[in-house]
Amino acid sequence: MFTGIELRVAGRQSVSLATHYRRSMFTGIKLRVALAALDFAERHPRFVRYFLRPLANAPLLSGLLPVLPRAYMGATAFEIHDVDVEKGRISIGGVDEVLFGSEIVEILHHVLGEAAGEEKERYLYEIGYQAGFKEATYALEKGRWAPKILVPLVTSAGLIDRVRCDNRMARFLDHVENMVARLILNEGGWGRIAEFDYRSRPIRVTLLYSQEAAWLPPSDQPVCHIFAGLVAGHVSAVSGERLEAREVACVAAGAEACVFEIDR
Ligand SMILES: [Zn+2]
Image (cartoon, rainbow, N blue to C red; front, top):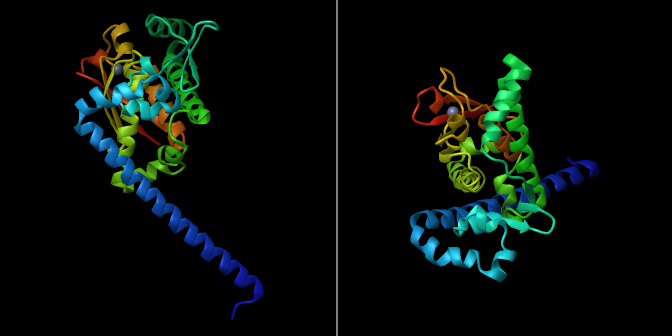
């Protein structure tokens, strides 16, 4: 027989279970609708290019839409950037950026090689990691990248384990990460992401035309340490746990593409 305290605890648990059930049902519906929309855009590139993209860049509507819906509609990073010529600022979704010539990659490798010797690779990776982690964190904090209703789908603790046992969630994240990669990496001059695969274990990222490999001489070891850190930092910020990336094939070492594996 329940005492008064036990009844209150039992009552709270049943409310909490019902709330949990409603939340997970709502999440399932959101996920199905978002996936259907993303699959549709992938199957109809002409509809995106000729109908959605002009809408995404229409003067009034573009100011109301967050970054990722505009990217979904086909807008490029160049169209989505805000430029304040008066103050000398450029930003995307509230995240300020500065532009360097791509030789900064070679300069970082050279200067850190002189200063840190064998520790160079670790420092380059950590610079990339912190840059990727902070950029993704700021983007999420600004609240201008994804509609609020979808944010819990693209970032949450335990995301990696969820993705590994939920194929729909993995497909959704593949879509979102490929969209983010296009905006930040491809259109940011790092090379072209051919694959951002949350379904593989470890997570697999394939980069064509690596800018980092292009600046460095041929090597018998992978050389894209900054980029490895960048993707590790980004995925860590999204998943809420520190993950590490390892470059397992590199153009500088004779491979056709640079391949990164990301895991705990
Ligand atoms: Zn490489």
